[in-house]
Length: 352
Image (spheres, rainbow, N blue to C red):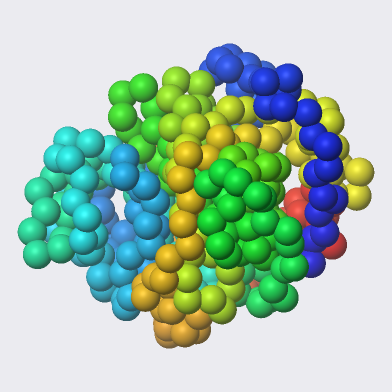
């Protein structure tokens, strides 16, 4: 379990060093490798449909917030090569951005879909796809989402502010995994995973939380979005629990050394942190979350093979040859090599 140093006597957000431009984000994070961008797809092919058939839940982000939906495999459907539908009782405004992240119990990799809201009927929302891609396993591995049930945390809740809602501070102190929904200036939405030890969403005061931006695939979707639109919503989960914490507010990107030092692992501080001014927070029962702890269905799809197939469909000759080979042999030696690379990367970040 990753420990966190409590942040005591922090200075105000107003005094922190912030990154406010896309150029600043690129200078801080760097550029993603070309295959990271090429593995996305705009077509709901057989691989995407296989994921929908196996995934029991998805986290969905809209302007109203971030929610967990589903409950059993097949709740999401590919209606055509460019349209899907998901269970979502509260329909967003047609034409607004919608983002989804599909979780498959037992798998580290997740599947992200972004699109535009269409009509809603009978509790199902129609979404026109703009982009879909397999997300690497680092966030889930950091959180030990499928392997560890954290002990309840004993914390002193803030005396006032949205985070003083009963149970919220204790839940956040225990939660190792969260999803962040952001959007750009054109209302394109994105829901990204965050994984760490318990206390991932660190309560700074009654209206402020912060979380570390650990190393990833360098897409930095959330950070880029925050430079044009500060509005965010978050959803946090605790393994084994049937409720979730939901928050909403505005966020900034901090590179303040004092804050980052409190998030260091083995003296390795993150590159940045996201600081959220919370406007509302709630702890709610979520029936769909039970499906996460019911155990993996069999057989599980190989999301890395699906990602390789998507890369093969978009890359150049060399990339296509490599991706086709990976797609046809993503098991055994290849799988072990990938897992070893994940472990090496996490050790380099300071994780045990």
